[in-house]
Image 1 (cartoon, rainbow, N blue to C red):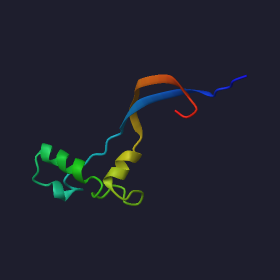
Image 2 (spheres, one colour; image 1 turned 90 degrees about the vertical axis):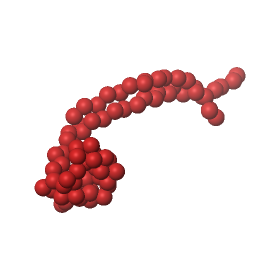
Image 3 (tube, rainbow, N blue to C red; image 1 turned 120 degrees about the vertical axis):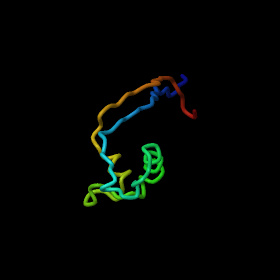
Amino acid sequence: MAKINVYGTESYSTFICREPIEVDTDNYPELEGMTEEEMKEYIRSNAYEMKPLNEEWYENLEEELMASDIRRDKIYGEESGIIFDGE
């Protein structure tokens, strides 16, 4: 009698968009004088180093953004398959 372990697998990608945080030059004077595009690029590159709005709970803006409530999520690219021991 021969035996083999068979496993079912699943994989997928998830996109999550969180509630926004309003960033303005009153709270972030380093953005003063920048165009909207310059502000976007600065925030993308420096969110980890920027102060959070809620300094009691978060260490930086990026952490605060990632803790915001989920506004929308989407699962896509779902796949299923079969694998065996050793694969």
